[in-house]
Image 1 (tube, rainbow, N blue to C red):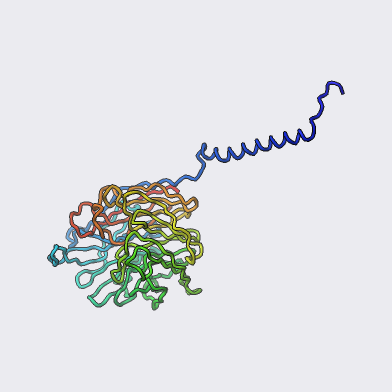
Image 2 (cartoon, rainbow, N blue to C red):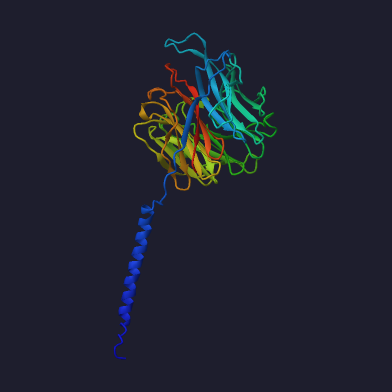
Length: 449
């Protein structure tokens, strides 16, 4: 009809549709790239933990005979009700200096202190193991589901004999005298795990072997230990409703910075044979010397979230915090991934724990940022692989960075509830000696997950 516009040719319509489609596609792609940036919806690192006040834990009661001069190798554990226990190796000078450089002779004992407010205050240290002819050292702690606290420690009765003692304390009660879980020479650091089954597991090193013993009667006795692997034990974790994974360094090449990490995962009830993982070669920040039966420097630590194992360690001349992961019970590992790499600093004694609600890890370590040893903490999101900026936990400078062997080989980290945790460390503030021993400090921290 006259006055009506003619329809466009078919091929013209096709070209028009194609142009529109291209424009729409480009718009969608552009918005997909730009909007997350504009709206800040991309993955962001978690918030760093909020740090509470520093509390000196090794403050002894007047007249106790202990002056709190030195403390070493602290560990911490949390009870089902959220109360905390800290154990450490207390030292004091028992003889005039016996060496040309004036180094004193020490005796050692184990002390335990408690906190019911998330690490803001601690009870007076409770004396557990007698000094003198007995030297007690290298404590380990674990609470069972009933709130009973178990303590394992190495005990040297004379130059030729050593024991691993396991004592327990019901809530509000004193520690039992303890039982000998193992006796012999060259016994290494014990690791206690309270298992979901109600059993108590004890891992330890013995003359270059890693062994495991189980108690099914509340720590009153232990079955004969089983040898799991050859090497030096540096970490242990319970996960997946009852599995246990141990990690450590191989015996060979320990005077080199390139060493092999072993892992072994098993069901403590005896269901299935232990699964020894594939060896992983890592570069430690220092040659790892052996002071039988233990390593003289910290090694890797391990934890698990949702069936995935996380292996943490300091690497590359002590300037990196590295991570490796395994979803195969340690039979294979991915990584290493560098999680934190500050400049001009030294990192040691990394410790890691899973947050109670899962999905996050909290870490603690000590380093020399600013020229002095201090404690630091950060939050790691396992879904995004991002670490928060580190929070400085120490509120005072520790020993200068050149002081070595100052903190032992452990820090302590434990949750008191879903968002609060406590970090415990050796701290050289206020000490003028050169022996490398420290006071025991703690700080309560709060994390946002």
